[in-house]
Image (cartoon, rainbow, N blue to C red; front, side, top):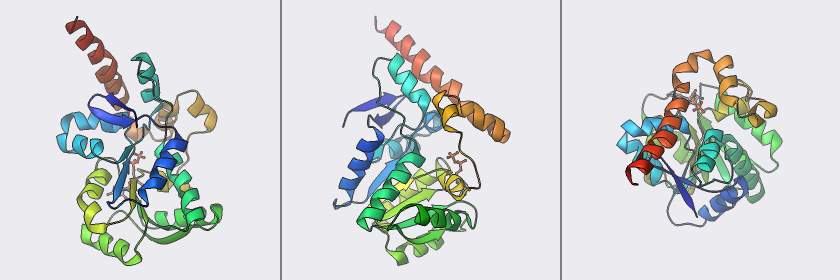
Length: 245
Ligand code: UDP
């Protein structure tokens, strides 16, 4: 699989279909596999967090979850195929799980959110078997792990917030021994219907960041990641190119 580097974070250059096909091969692997969804925010955060960088880079599939990553990759002459958002890959995998009868567990969100998301998913994907859900505000890791282990899922989706979810999964991946685990950020909020995703036309105009800024103004600090990301990837890149001439 071809990869592209964004300020030290390695991303797999895959389309949504290719990512889904890749995950299908994980089910027969002997080791548990982890899927991450690097976006500008986590790429910026990982500049000061070597552990997080290492966790993302060593994951088994790292899909580019940001339209700005597509734009930057084109400007740098190493174009990635498309944005693969975490929620799109998650839904695509729900379809696969429905068809193959794989058992799914949803972890994360405020109490009730994962359960609401599960009901929506089950009515949308024929054959989908969600064997358990648990909220993301548990007091200790063991509490959540016990809930998961008892249901023996094949696929685990973890939405505990950027950074925390990657670390949590990395810590417990081997012990839980689940074929496929994926981080999903706030996807359960969207699937449950508690939060709205930007409409397609806004996504197509590459201004999803603006939509989120307006609908969730409290996130403005997090949105500063975007200019920082552009600086790290474009400006720093130009500087190092000049230095090497
Ligand atoms: N979350 C959680 N436990 C925590 C912190 C956050 O379950 O301790 C959940 C939160 O309820 C939300 C999700 O993590 O559903 C991620 O939120 P975030 O805004 O980071 O998602 P993103 O915008 O990155 O997709």
